[in-house]
Image (tube, rainbow, N blue to C red):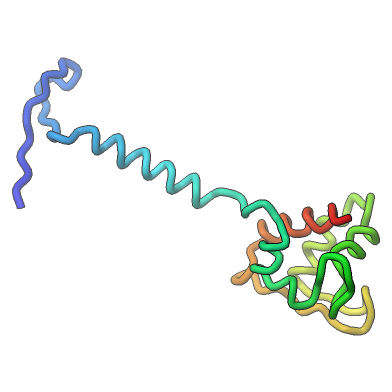
Length: 129
């Protein structure tokens, strides 16, 4: 395949060849920047939907105890505690036993739920009312 170039009339290019579709370079650069922005975006705003996608609803509900405590119970217990977000994120990640009874909370695999999503979910559930 042969792609021909043309001489641009733009004096800033000083006779260098340019592609007939030189705007394509700008478009590709914009797409690359957009893709990078999307890839580095924080997780979606936490919600019941994100909790379901992350597997939390297998053991927790918004307002009633299931296998584990409700989001509301967790929010009430840790209300006003400055270390609560870090403590709960660690419990989600590593699991725990004996905090809410004898049923152990299994650890959450980072391959399934990344750390940023865990922090977002913990912040959301601490606001549960």
